Image 1: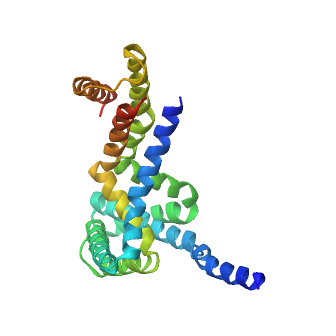
Image 2: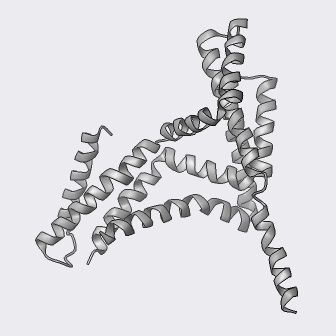
Image 3: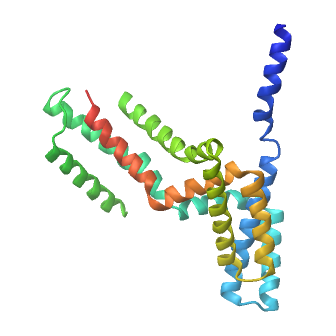
Length: 138
Length: 108
């Protein structure tokens, strides 16, 4: 009985685990299509749609998609992350936020433990955050 | 020190929660599933057209991408689209700054 229940439970649990089968391969293929589109767009933008452009596309695609995709795939993902504001996000996450948190702890220590910020103090903190972001170049 | 650690966990949790919310809603409510898939199809087609222009190749590449990202791995497509949309609109920054402010308020 217990074995049957375990088997049934396992068989019901397995499909969610097995649904990842083939995901990596498919997503690599999709990533290669995106890289190819970027190459085509970049070359056509610079050289038009002549035979030279096709030659350059073929050469670049050969090296980037087939020969050295293990490097260029990662580079393309990083490029996309940077394009969609990943760098600013990392700045907020790792630099500005913890710095301000440390500043807030310091301020609380000066003003007394357990004290909440007033609206004016919060406004001042936000102003400091904006200054830090400006200094960081964002 | 603990608050810094909490801050990081809160932020990561909020980000993951915001991104994963859409596939969960799509799974629970079929109308949302249909609407988001239509939006995904339009987004993919517009993006490919932006890269390759009008032509047969655009239709072909769009078809391949739609098959993989909307039909076969719909939750990957929906999650990715949600992440890109939130990042483009700066919602993640709002989450980071908002959580940090909230932690300042709730600090004891």
